[in-house]
Amino acid sequence: MAVTPNYYETLYIARPDIQEEDLAKIQQKLQDSISAHEGETIKADKWAERGLAYEIQDHKRGIYYILVFKALPSACAEIEKHLSFYNTDILRFITLKTTEEAVNKEKAAQEKAAEKAEAQKAEAEKAEAQKAEAEKAEAQKAEAAEEPVAEVVEEVAQEVVPETQQAESAEEPAAEAVEEVADKVEPETQQTESAEEPAAEVTEEEGGTK
Image 1: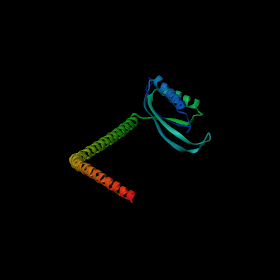
Image 2: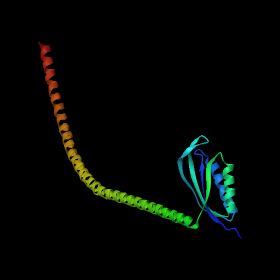
Image 3: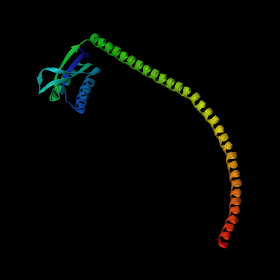
């Protein structure tokens, strides 16, 4: 009678401080064993880190992993051999035979969970895009509101400049008039000083005659 592949589920507990490279090496050994016995891996996931019912090798917690596969019965013995070999890293393990129906149910649940996660991711990306679009529109609106203010400031500046120029132009004739008055006053002052000089000389002569 020909031996046919069956469905199996292996649960194993790794020490909580296991190194990633050590865990990857063990998991690769398990995958190779399944492939070598006409098998396929259906699920290989980290389940959870949980407290242990009792302390094992001074560890009170462990990381639970689940491996679901389809392979010849001989694959189970090889998988358990590898897990036993790495007994310092793998605290406990157990392999159970399961059914195709249970595996398909598990696969359907996985696919549903993946679809839900994908939908949530798409919804989050959509919300983020809408938020970014709203922020962009708000920024454009603010820029559009600032443009008229800038135009008004420029117009006021253009009006102020001619007034300033007019004021400066008005100051120039006033300055010229002041200069003209100063020019007129200076000769008169000089004439007055010239007239005072002969009078002073006559006074000195009179004083000398006495």
